[in-house]
Figure 1: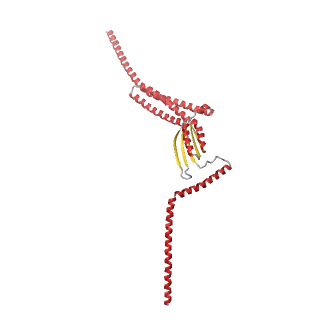
Figure 2 (figure 1 turned 180 degrees about the horizontal axis):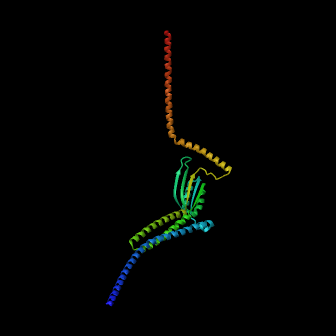
Figure 3 (figure 1 turned 60 degrees about the horizontal axis):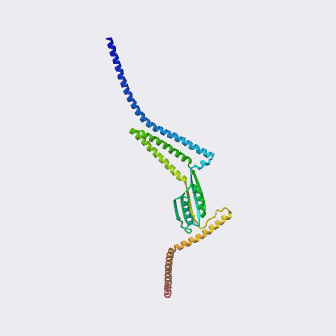
Length: 329
């Protein structure tokens, strides 16, 4: 009897252990599956965050490297580094000329021959001073040909004013390039995650991230294209004014006296010329006014004559009455 009890107890224990083992295996499998899905979702989000962090680190490293290289090159004055600097040049010229048409045509032809283009222009004829004209133009010239263009432009006139401005955008250009490259790498990493994603939430999250990255990359590329255009093509503003004579650029006392005396003579001449032009151009109006004044004078003279004839007759009648009164007395 005892043997049967021991045997049944052993069998019951073995059955209990078997059932518990099966239940444990099933729960472990369920936990593993849930853990895998959670890990995959968290891995996708974590990968995006990690890629962003890596991009930020690369960006910081490139920025530090770019800034350090710029400072070192500025300190050491490396010729090669100076050639790689990003410079935006702007030149302004004021030119006086007696041959206005020739200089205007020369400027337009020279801009084309130097591989540039005219951005905007303005022409006007000034009233007075012999109908003198002016012409202002803004042109874009290849940066390496700017000096040669300025020298060739001024030979038909006298340059009265010249200014040049140079803006160094090297550091900003390097920073924007580094940001763009870092964002491009992050974009490629997110694309790889999108190819492996299977869950809809993960796909939507990754596509939203790609859209933001694409917008930032396009923004930096647009800014760099503007910089490239301003760096490769320098701006030159030219103002041409027509004059009757060109003043020589002389600092001597005699030269200044000669220039001042010449200016005074031309001022006197222009005064009488302008006066003559005004009189002739307004001659019809002056004739009308002259006729009106003549009629008024004629009327005044007529009235005076009438008053003069009436006044003596009145005096004679009064004298006759006085004489009659005297005889009666």
